[in-house]
Length: 79
Image (cartoon, rainbow, N blue to C red):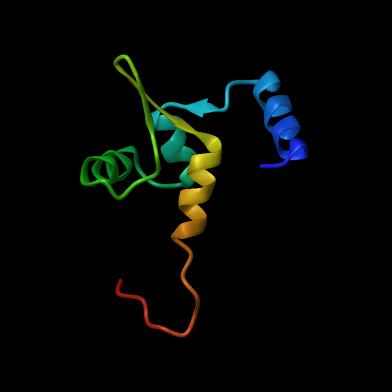
């Protein structure tokens, strides 16, 4: 990470918490809370943090996970 990225992350954190709960993270990803919980249970979802009883997702981890789900065209959808 470079210093500019660190500054940008610090500025975002000042405006509000960069952590989202499960419902907020699911809404951010535009998937159901149920699916996000299932992905977490199966070890296939975004990185999360457990703070005592709370499950929280960092917004940067959600973006990275979403980017990793990108599929290049050419194939057929399985759905």
